[in-house]
Amino acid sequence: MGRSFTFIILFFLCQILAFGLMAHEGESSTLSTITRTDGIWFATEVERLARQSPNESITVAQQAAAFFKQHPQPRLEGRVLNATSYAYYFLGKYDLSMEHAKKAEYFAKKHNVDDVLARAYMLQGNVLQTISDYQNSISKYQQAVLIYSQLGNDEFLGYCYNNMANTYERAGNYSIALEYYEKYKDLATDDSGHASADLGIGD
Image 1 (cartoon, helix red, strand yellow):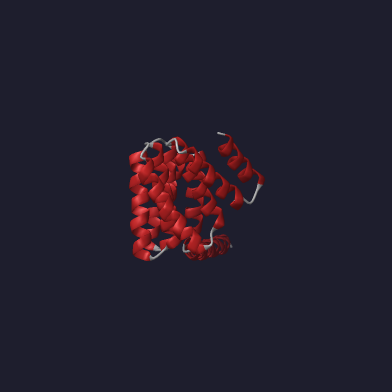
Image 2 (tube, helix red, strand yellow):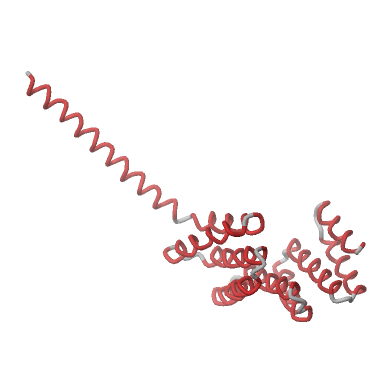
């Protein structure tokens, strides 16, 4: 009787263990499937953190780079490169910001990803404006404007106009700055956008 009882207990333990292993295998399979779409999460998260938590953004970007080596997704990978540039910009590391924006430019040209290319030009313009290279900054913004116009992306086209206005203002070209503030104001779709344009005009 004692042996039979022990055998029954062992039998049920084996069944429970086997079920647990099967469940774990099923979970691994599901997770493997999920990770194939995680590129969207990586791109969105790096972008979300770039301004408010740039160091964390860069850490996530490094994880994303490893992910994209196994699951190439050019547009999303380009977005991560641009967002990394943006994160370095807010850390005041302008050389690294420019480096990643140029990487994004090269990557976008290689894979024909126009929106990524436009963003890369825009970010390069930001860095050049910050270091007072106004002429080259405007040139980069103009390249971005051309692409955003072709894409019909009025939101980012407006951002480019606003950045160009700021650049002309810093360079002391106030009449041209005013023209671009007005262009931005025409495209601004919300109250904050109009407030930003009005502030620029006021300055």
